[in-house]
Length: 373
Image (cartoon, rainbow, N blue to C red; front, side, top):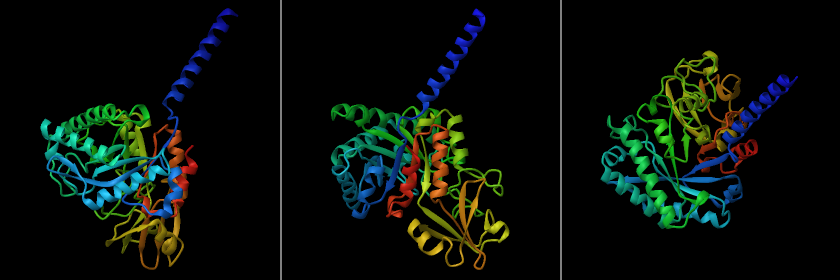
């Protein structure tokens, strides 16, 4: 009887330990983070549903982060929103697709130091709350920027230098704990992180913005889910998905609560698509452009010959026009609900999205906010 009691107590202790570990790894609050190129007064009611707005973009000139006059004005407009919603954080994203200067700046300690100093000055001057590094991508030159075999090591060194400089700036400016200056990084998955030491980078950033969209685009040979959560039954073996991105980062040492998966507030259209499987993962004639969420609702979803389909394997919708052979991939409230459930099931940090002004009514933001506690 005594042995049975001891065994029971041990079992209870093990279960309690597991439960405490799971609770500790679950974020107390899931972040909702949105990139914004600007703001309209009609969107003000959405502020209570956003934790962080990331202004896009500052760029690099020489070894310093700089803002064009128009960009500085738009950043100040975003920062001004904090007067209505003091809990809002406004972060400055530096870079973006095709924006170079990173590899050259990060190649030396002096360059990294000048960059970090300029970042601190920018935040203090504009009363912003942090920096998001959007180097697309270390070790890669697909976007037309310069790259180097040294980018892998230099990216970690750059994050370390910026992190340390922001900590000093936080101390100088009296910012403590949740109010300190933050550092995040916008990152892709698959081959695009081959030159990033994910585990080392994770120690320096507050979170990663996983760009789990644009998986198919004008540079890919077939259509498909550009923001799919899982792999479609028709997808190639190497198809990129949000789930595979998360697993890649976790396996490389990134903590789950530092991973924010991405939602796309726009669709991508392909023309002259081969009709098999209603155009899903098929060759196409040419890329036909992007459509923001309001245009998708107004002109495409179950309109003008475009029929909505749902891929239960990928947890993603698509549109197919059998008459014109046009295909559109996008996110909608149903796919966003699936992503929110995934975030909670895997104890991730939350959801980020591109881009605020492509959802002016807040319908997709509402779906994000509704499904995350």
